[in-house]
Length: 126
Image (cartoon, rainbow, N blue to C red; front, side):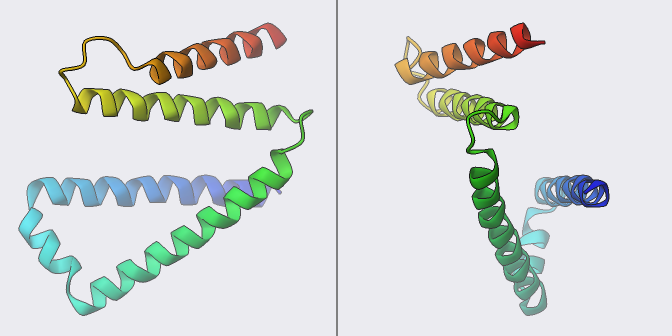
């Protein structure tokens, strides 16, 4: 499993590098990047890449739900904490898109409370 985890780390780093490279090119040369991505070879590669990432995402989602779905598994708790943190980030982004809102959305407050509760429970276990 150590070799598999090492490969996962390397692939994860590489995915972030690809994302950063595309973001940088989009910021510097948006028209050139757009036309390059719509070239037939590039678009075929991009579609194949997206399909592979989507398939892996679905597999990992199923794998994590099956493996981590057991209540005694601490990794499942970390996954739920991550999901709550991500939900809070999305809610903050959505609320920022609507600046006319004066008070925070109740779901955002609930998500932040859940995150704080999970983090304090995790800290007390250590």
